Image 1 (cartoon, rainbow, N blue to C red):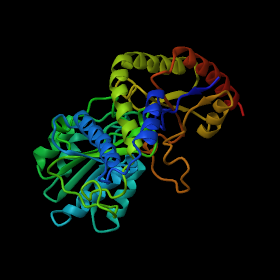
Image 2 (image 1 turned 60 degrees about the vertical axis):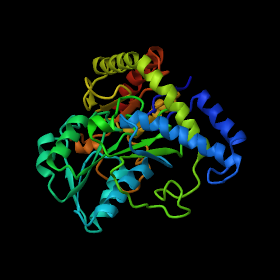
Image 3 (image 1 turned 30 degrees about the horizontal axis):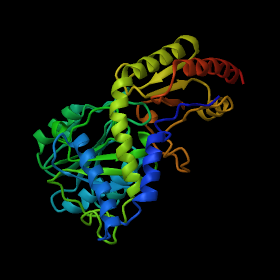
Length: 379
């Protein structure tokens, strides 16, 4: 038996998505910059995907889509691109202490190069203090970068409230949202949230790795961070990943329908699983906001048990989970994580559910968890 509960790290591509990707690789293999028909056909796939994806994030037909290699590049382009384009107007940027490493490392680079980075702390459930945000924005603030759905504990920030605070305090401050964990699962509207930049990665919603996009509002200027042939209006040089882009559009089309239909069952599964853990496993505690957090992420600390040890004990039974963000789990340098930011001093296991996760699978995981936590707690 194989039970995959690491969908926040990556998802298994849907068969329809794989078929779409294979079709493009085999039939629409031209370079989209070429002037002949093969190039025109490839360019059409890119344009069609851009128009569809734009409607899903913008709330209007305004703005544009820049295709990237995924969430990390999208976050880098948004943050470094704005910083370079607007540094003469201000050098202050606001973020939080529970962002993805691609945001944190971008902020670290800017801090080392003359920018003032203000980091908002979060409460025990992972929420920022809106009053602190309001007080921190000033006339030197060029950008606020805040994650929508946290990748480790599933906390969901209120983008509409945040966007209104930013624009009321300083209309010239840009608002960037890392929507990697939330896109297709939760509605996002650049128009309603007054969001200027939105980062997305395809492999979080049953599409292949190595492709994503950055939504850019029409009033935002960016300095490019990749140099070359000037593709995508010189904002991101390099021949576009046509097959990946086509597959990403197909996956998004499917997921916007699937998540709407199965959201309640995923909520029920998560609540059932969490409540059973709390009721049957001693010294287990939930990290984040169980009642209002993302329906696909559950983070649990099993007191006194090393998360890596429990992870491998579960793996021996064909159960695949995570002990933290997959993007930082192999890092040699120990850094502040979302758990330490919310005051959790022990490790934890992240269970992240997919649309095909069943109650029967969760019951089996609960059985193995109960056995293994008893065994490991006595070692």
